[in-house]
Length: 145
Image (cartoon, rainbow, N blue to C red; front, side, top):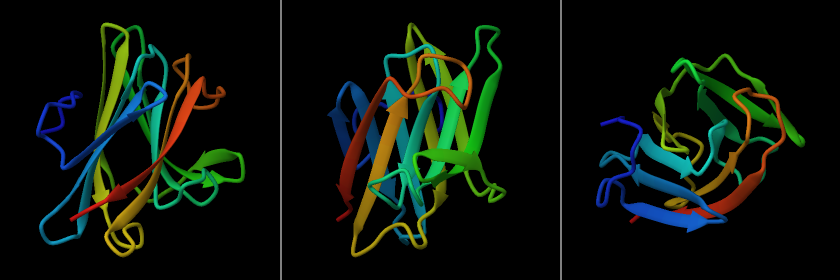
């Protein structure tokens, strides 16, 4: 359930680095990735899949503004930046509660999971926008069993 929280036992993999928690599970048929990322920020949060670098990564960037409006964008990493893409394959939900922003998403695993492994990145920003520089980031290597 995409409710903007990472609950104990909800995901097969959970790891925290640099204050950013990422969680992931792979569907039983191996076709869908379920991911979440959470961090202490009132700004944007993002996850990237399929690469340990921003360049070439499939990304989802999201935030909830001060009025409660939620923004979610599918992006593609290009060099040291990113741009919106037209894929629109993710189902995602973002929630900000008590200074913590959490993004939960599901999207196709095809071309992202290689030999049971998913390279991922995550980042947080301090503003409610999609262009300001991150204030924290981390790289993860997720092994699905």
